Image (cartoon, rainbow, N blue to C red; front, top):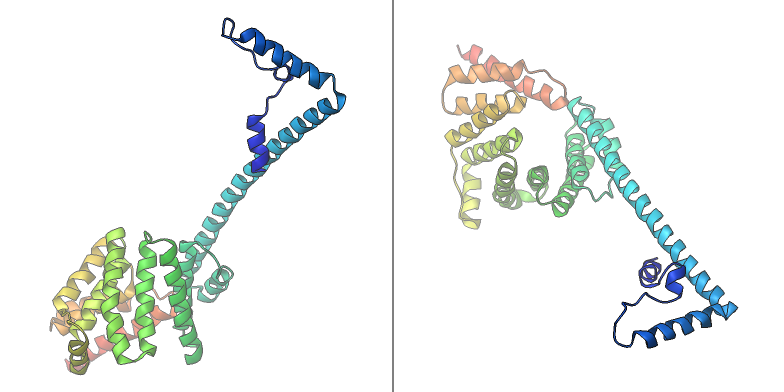
Length: 316
């Protein structure tokens, strides 16, 4: 088809062209050239076989170009339909996620495991992780899903490094894998994940979840047990963090998107407990306990918040 298109542009079309191009009058040698073109035209016209071949060749070139146009237009329509289809799937996936329909979400996105679309892939990583954290998921299945989620997140990042969500879920999945690779790998992964979280915030400063996750990173290092600190010092130039730093990120996440996540409320309460401010701890833990529970994770957070609040009353 490309060849046909090239020929379409190089071949003369129309009856006047068959007699040769119109030359400018007064040009040097114009008479000789006119005679030559007329002789060639007469040669073709006087040879029926040559004329038929010329006509057939022109028709085939024209049909080739028409076919090229039709296929090009069809390709554009197909590409537009594909984009629309992806957008439709993403909307459906986000609705299922927000509704807590985790099994349906995973079933929907699992159909697109071979997709090259970063937006589909990071959502599939998220869905795999959510399914893996359900109480009914066996330990063997959970491990498979954790590594599966990491693979999807990695592919999403390879397809689009400008996707803040791909950076975020890649970091989350690296952290999850550390649970299956020993304490050294877990600590090593902990150092790796801060950078993609920060990249996610850089790409989208309004993403409260990424800010929240940096807060978790700070909180985790602030409460790291002594033996893990010792391993970290042997392996790395160990960074340090504080509960105050973690608290700053949790509050910043709330400022960006108030009440976006019950775990952020819970961690605000727990961090204030670490800082011995029971009044503010009780305030945030109560918010976490009263947060609507749409998912199993929300129910677990409600339970933990209620237990911590009960501990307050028992001590008083």
